[in-house]
Image (cartoon, rainbow, N blue to C red; front, side, top):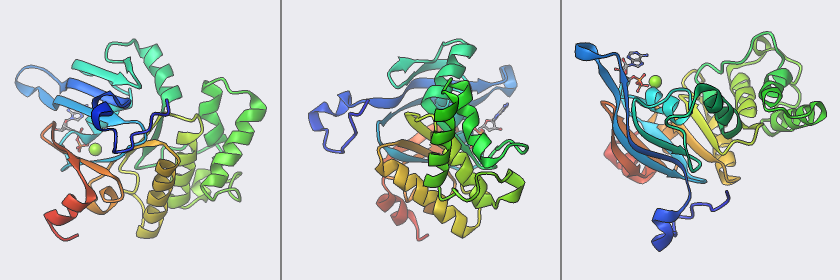
Length: 252
Ligand SMILES: Nc1ncnc2c1ncn2[C@@H]1O[C@H](COP(=O)(O)OP(=O)(O)O)[C@@H](O)[C@H]1O
Ligand SMILES: [Mg+2]
């Protein structure tokens, strides 16, 4: 569980623990003439503790890939090993359980429940995971404090700024201690200042050992990661770009 990718794995490299391993994965929408290969033979490995960004133009298949990686969807063909377990053909209920235990999600539009307070939004995934009542509250308060929101526990989403809502969503995403944090355009709806705060939180989570995968079309956001994966037409064009090589493509 804690064989962290250290960039020096050398001979052990191919054996270093992958949190995500996709082998020849396809996701085809529709059939016949109108079929769209939104994921077209994708093979990809992401190691424990890595901080990756997935980039690509609109329609290149980023969300489709994210949904597959996040076990919200299953491949049409190919294999997906999440944390060493082949989840490509697993039933819907087991998949939902695995998702709840292993993956934290952050979305562009926060997706908080509007009638629940910040605290209750963060408590909710722990109820599904069967965490006891006292522990739930304690852990939710601690996660929200980590996001700088200890003074906003009882606020509803509509009483919070966009940046605050996204930080509640991040607290919710990490509170079950997932092996993987997935974010789809997490700064897409935020102003520059709030976006910076969200990026800094991802960096801190990465520094504490979390595996982080962020989908973004912002080169600036991507450049805070360690490794940039480029998608085009459902395919992975490159999966080993660094912020340095991306910055050299063209000035920001
Ligand atoms: N549910 C769906 N049904 C049919 N086509 C879809 C569906 N979702 C996405 N697509 C198509 O798959 C391709 C990839 O979409 P998507 O994964 O949303 O890309 P991105 O997130 O990079 O914008 C696009 O051509 C899109 O129109
Ligand atoms: Mg998308």
